[in-house]
Length: 140
Image (cartoon, rainbow, N blue to C red):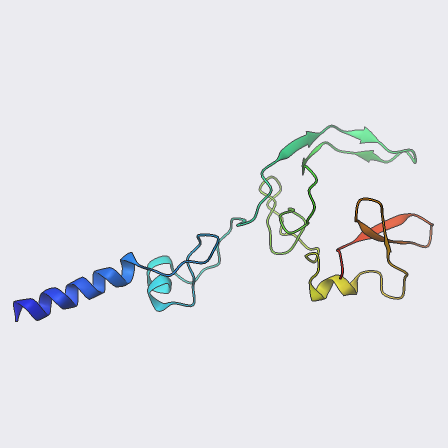
C-alpha cells in the first residue's frame, strides 16, 4: 500500500516538475499541468522583445510639427520584436502594438490597390497620395 501511495505521489510531482515548455522557454498552456500551475491569463511581457533601446530627443519636422522625445528600438531586419507590432507591448507607454508582423496574412491588408516597392535595404513601401513613402510589413 505504501509503495502504491509513493508511486502516486511521485507521478503527481513529476507532472509539475516536467511541465511542457515552448522553444522560447515559456510554459505551453495547452497542457493541463501548466494551466494549473501558471493559470490561464495571458502574459504581459514580450517573448521576442528587442532590448536594444535608445532615447530619441525631441525634434521639429520641416513642416513645423514638434515630435516629443521618446524611446525607440534600434533597427534590425524584422518587426516581430518591435513595440508597435501585435501582440507586443511598449513598457514605456504601456500600449499594445497594432501593426501586423512581417510575412503574416495581415501584412497584405496594408497598401491595398497600391504598387508595393522594395527599397535598397529590403524595406517594402508604397507611395501615398502626397508622393511620400509609406512603409508596410514585409510580404513574400
